[in-house]
Length: 204
Image 1 (cartoon, helix red, strand yellow):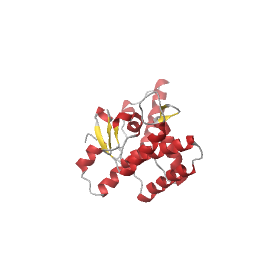
Image 2 (cartoon, helix red, strand yellow):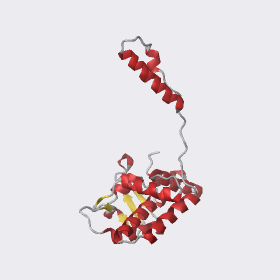
Image 3 (tube, rainbow, N blue to C red):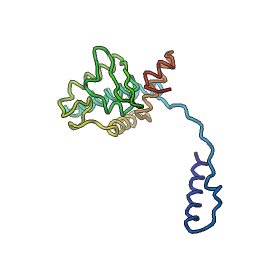
Image 4 (spheres, helix red, strand yellow):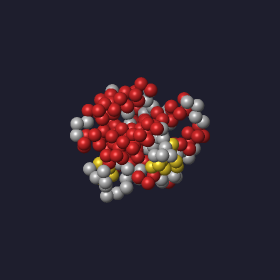
């Protein structure tokens, strides 16, 4: 990464010199940096994800007003969809009420990455977290599951509130890291890669 950044800086300087009418060998501008290896997905350990869960549970216990309770339940429901469902944060953002089937313990992601629909199977804990939130959600002008101040909750809201929970729990977390945690835990439990591919909505 450092070598590639230095090369980009060097070539930017060469282009500046070229604009000043200095003669610059074109080969230097076409020089490619070393290819970076693909990194393994980063995930949370069992201890880290449990600390995060405990923090969100504690926030719910400490909620002193209906608004604080609703926000705490929103955070908790989104957390379980990311961790126990492996959803992308954009998929949580776009989730509609009609897409959730609590008795069947599943939901449908419509038009996910690559515009593919898929079914996502949920744990009982995740279903309960979603139902707890829906009980205080209130009515909104649209059918998005997650509302914030009567408007659809945004990806940035989920990211920022999860980041705040991570800072309280001492855990570096992003929505996508929870998705990787979901996948890693399934692999460790013996889930076949081809099954995991379908659950995550990956093309390959």
